[in-house]
Image (cartoon, rainbow, N blue to C red; front, side):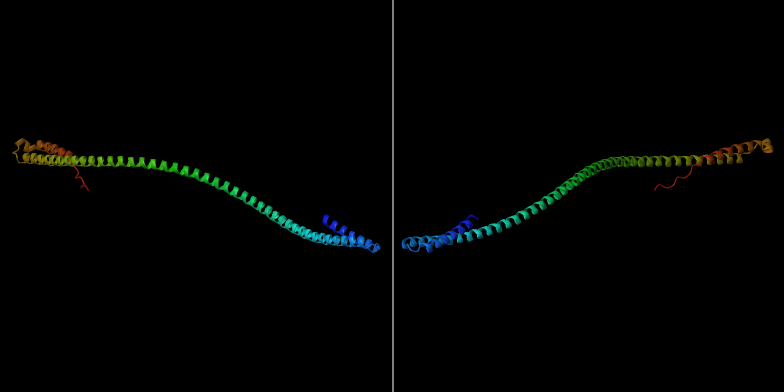
Length: 217
């Protein structure tokens, strides 16, 4: 704007000088100086006009640059707002991920504790199973021993039973073959009493007759 005012003033000066030259045409020397001054004024006016045009171009370029900078600033502000919103989302996601990580860590600790308890219980059960197996082997051995002893007792009882029955039969046969007294043969009381006694012994033997044991697997 300053250069524009300067150019206008220069143009007005040129016009005034031209008027002055027309009025004072009588003095050649003065006219020559005035023409020279007018020429210089015209040159200055041209330079001022050129400078004004250059300044206007620079101003337009500056305005365009300012507009570009304003657009870039607005874009940067928009990007900054977008980045801020993205940062907030990332912060929320990070907080959620940390909470999930902490929850997983707690679950892992609980599972590890449960696993340790299960392993301890399994170890205890293994020991109890080993002890029970050992007791089972001992009981199997004891059962085998008792089975052998019972079989021996059964064989002895069977032998005693057989011997007892044989003795009873021998005694009965002995008294049957022995010549009876005349009175005994007449009454038969002594023979009946002996038969009753032998029958009682035989019943007692039959009552305690040993039972054969089943075969061992």
